Amino acid sequence: MTEVSRRHLLLASGAVLITRAAQARAPGEAASPSQRWGLLIDTAKCDSGCTACIDGCKAEMGLTGHDRPLTDAQYIRKLTVKDPMDGNTHFLPVMCQHCAKPACVDVCPTGASMKRADGIVLVDRHICIGCRYCMMACPYKARSFTHEEQSGQKPHLPRGKGTVEGCTLCVHRIDAGGQPACVEACATKGKGAMLFGDLKDPGSTIARRVAAEATTRIRADLGLGPAVRYQGI
Amino acid sequence: MTLLARLLLGLMLTVTAAAAFAADFPALPKARGGDCVAAAPVMRRDHADMLKHQRDDTLRRGIRGVKASLKDCVACHSTDGADAKPVPITAPGQFCQTCHAYVAAKPDCFECHATTTGAAP
Image (cartoon, rainbow over all chains, first blue to last red; front, side, top):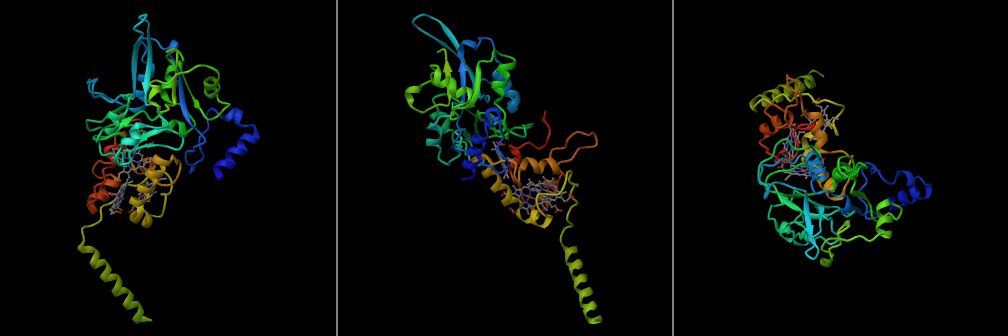
């Protein structure tokens, strides 16, 4: 009830136009189902050699590896897709797609894989038993398993041996009114191929563009309802 | 009057005598920042429950900026070493560790959670 009235107050005041993009929730306020955070990625602006989003993600999350690409934690993978008919290639970053109907949540035996009210899909590592069903269920290969003991973690991203992890859409930044580190890195060091926003807010840039322009979801046929949209593929 | 005083004195003596049997409670490093999130007796008794409650509220419901954040415990209760570098809160002699060693509790929180406030190396 309070959430609704607060939102209406904001809408009525008109202040929402200025504050919409980045607004931290008040202390003590829970994530709200009236929001749905998502990304729009324009592959035409995604270059083959660029790894700005991946580097930005690793730095933000404190992901250190052991030079073992098969098992090192990765929240974003960069894919090359090739059209077999004409041989044209495109590049796209793939991270957790924050599905509306996440397969990882369906298969999790403990409830550790979970979807927050605002659509962000997370691993509650406090109750993750490391079974990795979610990793097998995810068609986007979005999750990693922490194989080694960790030290030097970032305070905003606790991570440790024996649990599954993946992109959190930078939930710690979103809750503080910011945007994901990959989007920021792509804007400053890349070509600004990524747009972040609230898909349920009809006035947001992302919702307006998704309404006006053709966008695709990868493996849309699976019907999982990803919150990450792509253009140009 | 004197009887009461004697009684009280006697009581105090037995209390101190009893305390001397247990291993002396180790001194805890001083906290930085303001007051704790609750009074010390409450904290001693209830902090484990507070933290468990908080972790579900924050992670699963997205509630931030409220009382018993583990990040905040570390911010106030971790210390800097003689070299001015932050000491991991799990190191011997540090706040949580000292008392937990005394009471034989072994929470695993810091296998994942950062042991210092700063951007760790």
